[in-house]
Length: 378
Image 1 (cartoon, rainbow, N blue to C red):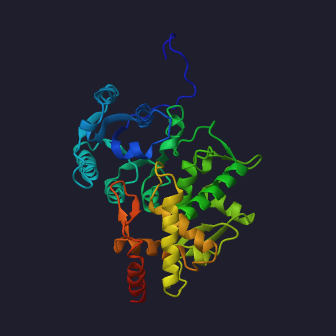
Image 2: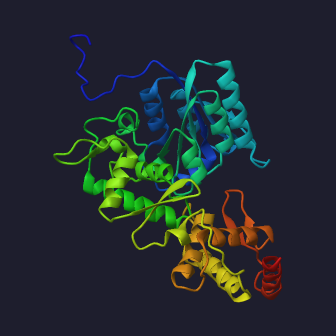
Image 3: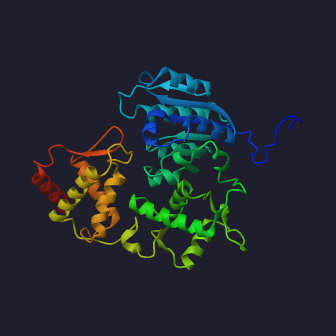
């Protein structure tokens, strides 16, 4: 620094590696409702903290947006790409093609930052990782699938993407100032397991670690950020989890070769995504309960909230009936039941990946129940 330059002791030295940003603007705009952080500025700050941004591309139907917004994005170095939303998944396809083209045309780009609402980019992530690229996904953890959370090298929740925090988001180089007490880390772990269960997500080690990082209520940024007074740091996430299990605060079970985490009062065999328990087929009365729970979910939740009508929101209400003893089936079985409602056209998928119950379901309720019972008995 020159004699006139202010000291910056807290700023991490920026890498010289090249990064690329791909932002699904319209889908993320819906997911980001209620978040106050300036997303565009935060993305610029984060990408710069990771290296030199070679590309920053943002996709939307720009004819529907204000010109001032487009100009502002240009001023920050983004390249707005117009994509007509008339065709299904048009942004997904364009973003995927551009990512792969960039990987081949600019081999020096080592990190891909993909900003998405809830799109399932697992095949793209896997393709980029095959090319030895680091992939960071930025979105809402509450609507991201377990597969998406587990596929990326790093997942950052939109709510954590604040310009004042971006320098501390990389798990590979945690700041010494980013500390979380052991007690808070345990609370964060329990909250992540509970959230995964409510949302029908996996409770495997990797998924829980990512959900913990995404929790805005805790400073957890990987096992290196856990501080236990008078004790050496944990060697890895597994060592931390083992310590919590030894204290009786969680359960660890290995099923089908995968380690899963459970709360103390849970039955691992019933809750596991790999459950081998065999249950009787769903009865007509149980289908009746599932339909009522779906209806209740759509009536009681706020239509303006980004989780309205989402699969995980519907699953939460169906699982409530399980906890009350009215649906004695595994979580996987209950998720399959919701998928069956989609297959039969009782639940209709919307453009934003949420679901609505078909308008004629009340008049045709008995017919639908008969179809569900017949399919279940096959």
